[in-house]
Length: 278
Image (cartoon, rainbow, N blue to C red):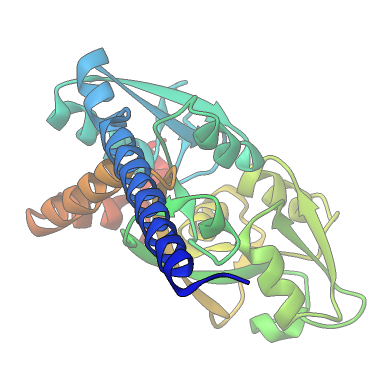
């Protein structure tokens, strides 16, 4: 049986021990926070190395593609060219198919990805996205011979719809067109358009800017009436790169205010003008 005196002594010693452990825990936590704050800041690394490394889609006009002159261009490409110039660093573009963009960023091969990517719930588990730089309508298109007028006409049993593999439009089609046969194609939007042209898919789905370009390339194509979705588009980096993410948000704000972003959007994302030039 513990006496009052010995019990009091134990309480005092126990309290001191707990306080000591608690203090050590706070100290460790503080050191951890300091270590994290002192860890590499990729934005500082970009300036120090003099090179900005950006993951871009191999073929995804009008956002990123190689044109008829063999030049890499597109909306996202021209934006990151401006970024690199304003940062006074060189630009290194790293080509990946759509499914390779996120792994390229998370592996550290690229500082961030520049694409027409939607920050959906699944992607935001592994990436941090900028505020949307643009919103884009999604449309369906087909050959003129198809008996479709509005996009809902393609959402029927027996109709196949082509979509970029791994894109947000896959989930959209599963939700809105559950009776259609959904066909995923690697190789970006052009691969889907080629499938529609070759009758391997009855219709295709993409953003309005890409679809407008296909109307120039394929004279027997038509865009179906209506837009089933309007996606926000963003660039993305690793979750711990808070400085870079904040910098990109600020940069979009600046070029939106000085008119450069709208000028690029008008040319690349709001009509087929770019198609004639590239």
